[in-house]
Length: 254
Image (cartoon, rainbow, N blue to C red; front, side):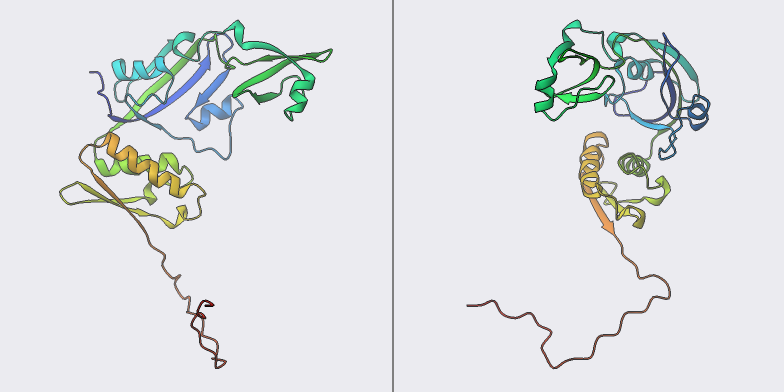
């Protein structure tokens, strides 16, 4: 039975290039280790997929929506036009080395550069001329994807926890506490201490609130709570003896 738009799913997957067998991405640590692509600072776990959100390549998301089943593993092939696009010869450009140097770019073969609002790879440097390919590195390739829908999330509070965890990956999912009030229309979210020093915390909170309103129709208010508790055994510092001067801030000069 096809999944419906805005349904929340947890999906494990492994994506490889059909032509070479090269691993592109995986949510499974053992697969990454076997392929020599393991990243120690990455969290390997099923990814949150919201049907219709379009965060995955087109062919992958379409197959999940139409053919995915909870607990069933599928292997599919996704052609270039529904993956990373076909190669476009017009995106391979020859630039002058002087032009790149003026932009603060030192021409080196294999170097990934950002130039003219596009990202490309330098393919060759010869006689002051630099060949740059601005196609996506996986353009023209067919993807082979093996995936399994691990779970369909029904509970609104659990959906919010996963939205937060998606934005703040280093904070464990179970650390986020969500309570629904006002007949399920208000979500009270307690931000755990583990998230307090995350650089993008405030941005994440704003984005997640908008995602809640977009994908969870029953909720119209999100309230964030941050609780700073004194550590056990920690005593308040004694106030320094008064020097006779007032602790009040001085009046502004008139």
